[in-house]
Amino acid sequence: MPISILYIATVAIWGTSWFALRFQIGQVPELQSIAYRFLLAAAILILWCFATRRRLRFGWRDHLFCAIQGATLFWFNYLLFYFATARIPSGLMAVCFSTILVMNIANGAIFFGSRAERRVWIGALLGMAGLGLVFLPEIVGIEFSRAHLEGLLLSLVATFSASLGNMVSVRHKRAGMPVVESNALGMGYGALLGLAAAGLFSSPFRFDVEAPYLLSLGYLAFFASVIGFGSYLTLVQRIGADRAAYASVLFPLLALLLSTLFEGYRWTLPAGLGILLVLAGNLLVLLRAKPAPAMPAAALPRTEP
Image (cartoon, rainbow, N blue to C red; front, side):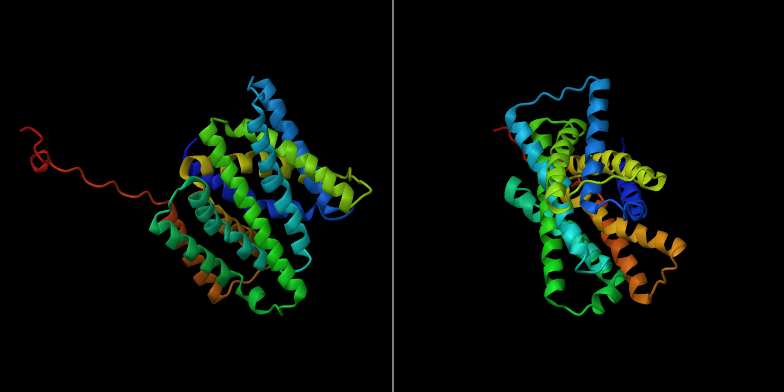
């Protein structure tokens, strides 16, 4: 599948998943809903693997890294963001999560010795600054207290956890593990950890059989998890974790666009400038570097004696 389609799918699905999340709030505690989501997503992927005869038998080392990815990307970061939600506004959380751009660049250098191009760094900074302008009213209006500082710390740790999960995906590529199979195992391990966390922090277990909850759970499991994470982690393996992470800046903007249409969100001049910065950063991050022109044959040094 072309990279452009994967990128658009990631932004479109994750930018609209907030709408489905609204129907998850109610009778079922959020931690339990998260566990149900990834349990269903893992079941879908495992059944797909069996139906298409994809092997799920890997060595213990591969299973260990799938468990690490499940813990960091499909459970721990959600757990921390869940606790941060009660402490800071959603706009500030979005800005915190956009720092995954820088974290992926830094972690790529630490774990794999990879270096991001200068334009990727500039694009990342432009995107983060633009997102900050978009959510400027929420950021400026907050009075920092101990709870707010805790929320900031939780959000940043959650983002770092997600970045580590991205690094595991890079490792999967180097080890020859396909995205579908590794996601099936990773989400399975994450769902088990999520069920354990839900039992500790939000027992007794509950479930909602009403149509809005079931339909939104199905959307989050199939589209936001199976398709969304499948598209995103494929991007991580194809174009690198640094460039793929720019989707984290774009999907909050799509969510705001939908909020404009359905919830009466009003745009401001700083928000408009922020959009321009985000788009400029996106252009820098995703543009391919031009290859150096080949030297003409006459200019090549002679090698014969």
